Every structure is written in structure tokens, then in C-alpha cells.
Amino acid sequence: MADENQIAETTKKFQIQHDRPNCIGCAACAAVAPDFWTMSDDGKSDIVGCRKRDDEWEELDVEEKDYQINKEAADSCPVNVIHIINKQTGEKII
Ligand code: SF4
Figure 1: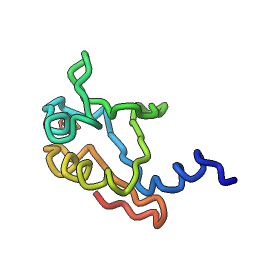
Figure 2: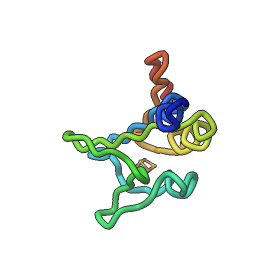
Figure 3: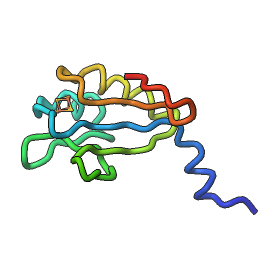
Figure 4: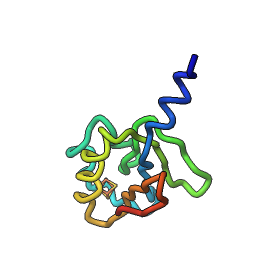
């Protein structure tokens, strides 16, 4: 029997990255994609359920169905601190 967690991981084709140190806290991402972006008490945004890196960037792997809404969030960011990577090709989409 296939491992369901393994299948779930392989369907997560994209990685959202948040350059949190340079976030200006405008809240556009949280307005556009509230299921994925939330505002924190320190005035900056967070990716919901993310991994926090040592350099204070945040990362979250998402499935293809969640790409578009996060692309819209990235497009809405006035300082371009939201990035999306295609994990299969390594392409930096934004
Ligand atoms: S849209 Fe960009 S600058 Fe504004 S809160 Fe979100 S990540 Fe930060």
C-alpha cells in the first residue's frame, strides 16, 4: 500500500517563500489569501503553518490547486517579498 503522506508530499509542487525581514506589514497578502496569510502581532505577515528558517524567512510547500491564490498574494505585495518556487524544475516564478 502506498504511503499517503508520501503521496501528499509529492503533490506539493510549489514552495511559497516569505522574506519576512523585509515585509512592511501592508496586509495585502492577508486580504487576498487569508487561508494562507495572516497578520502577526509585530505588524508583519506570516504564512499560515509555515516553517521558519534561521534567516527569518518563512516557507510552505503547497499543492498545485493552491498556487493561483498565492500567486495573487505575491502579485499584491508592494515590496515583492513573497516568492514562489516550482519545486520540480527549480524555477523561481516570482
Ligand atoms: S503583501 Fe508583502 S509587505 Fe504586505 S504584509 Fe504581505 S508580505 Fe508583507
